[in-house]
Image (cartoon, rainbow, N blue to C red; front, side):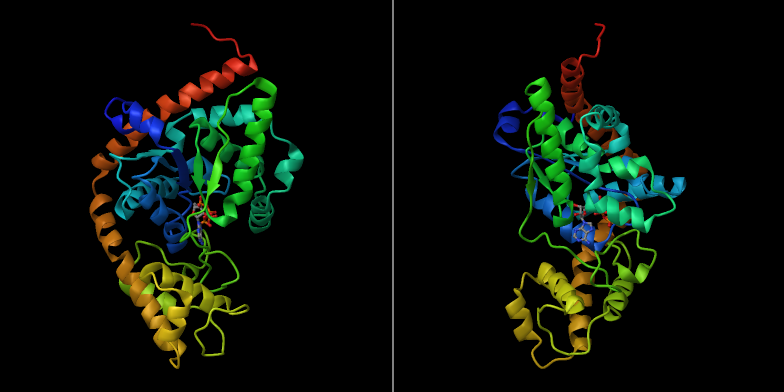
Length: 345
Ligand code: AQP
């Protein structure tokens, strides 16, 4: 525990810096959406904040997973965090199921969250439609587990994509309710939207979010796929018949590709429109494919090296979960005391 001194043993630093918690589900191979919408931003936050980055495997089983795949995807996700630039010496990187306090706090918060609140969550409505054969209670109470993830660490800021805003709002409501009933217990977190954190849409249906669990692999770019695969997928992305590179309403496919191009090149939409004036979609798609494949190249290489080093990855997991468990226990003990659970010394 003491070796992860970045968080526990640096009180002056910890007091000065705000705390951040975020995570990705190991429900598949991480996509360009997870990278541009989440992990790329996490990397930039490490110097200014005290960061906890979690592989949220408890969340992943709200949708049926093949056990062997889940295990593999968990390790791959952790390796990818590091390959993308998360430094486990600086930030706490861990696997959610290694810290039992997440599930424990979740039960207490379940008893302080209203059925009506959960019924209004759009992600539940979307996912229960997508997985109509498995509308389980976990899918319904997913936001309560997310609230537990955040509140356990007395988190100040939660960097999330715009799609997760509703869940952070629920977290705030549940924390305020709990504090109102039992006295000051949880810090009230704020959502944190990084300017460059944009929503990346599916390549085959650009009106929908790019998702790692999409059954059609042509719909997403996996961070670790080959350069050729990335270029090929972007070249076959659905666009429109206008042949004009312009960011405009109704041009979802082109808007999506412009967002990707802008994320990798730092160019504004105006600059991109000028660059491709008079050029066809073929040229534009090729350029997007290349900047994307080149941008992901170093991550792919570092990932290939890391994923073979199981001992190192398990060491990171172990140290991360020691640090996270220490912090989580402090909050959970407080919660148990507040609700009146009997404790034996
Ligand atoms: N397409 C996206 N564009 C921008 N941000 C995205 N995120 C996910 N997809 C995109 C951001 O990644 C973080 C973690 O996501 P998650 O894996 O916990 O859950 P998710 O949002 O449901 O991601 P997927 O890939 O769509 O997973 P599945 O397919 O399992 O449902 C979040 O901050 C999210 O905003």
